[in-house]
Image 1 (cartoon, rainbow, N blue to C red):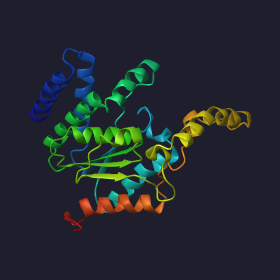
Image 2: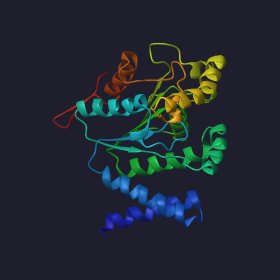
Image 3: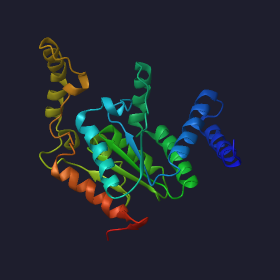
Length: 266
């Protein structure tokens, strides 16, 4: 092991002990994660982090197609601007019912504890990789979580957040900095979940089990989450307004990279 690696590991362990006290398992997992990210992102320009919607545990390949299209769209834009990138996910909840029940309190508290942990992680990464810019990407609850993380950062600095379709209960608590992009509509129709259109929301959720059963009987089994389609609460990359807002944000903040020189659009 090199001296730099040992020093980084020691600092990561110190931070982990502050966050998790005597929990050895969580400390070790946190340290390994930080070291892995710092090692993988060392030669990259941008670190793209997907905060999944819903409970926050769905792998990108199993996410709703439109949510996946946003992450892929951001990736393609920054690559087209000449930047090297590393894409990862931030899984914030386990799959078990106990994990989900525990997460309900977190959601009511605007993800207070989990946001502090991710904010500490991002601070550590950007302090040790001062050339690296971080872009978090979240839809729905993932957008709310991303904003909660931004609240924990006194100076966002190298950290940016793209937030799409934040549900109504969180909107009154969100903050918007110059490093934040909030997309509150897909440009085609109002987002019922953002506008708190209660009758439409209830109709959608109560109808989901029937849609799930119908697909199964038709021989086309579908994930239950795919059957919850709140009108307007989808932000496909193919929607012109969605693509325009995100593309403009990235180009304005980062510009293009030509011959290792960044050209920022004013």
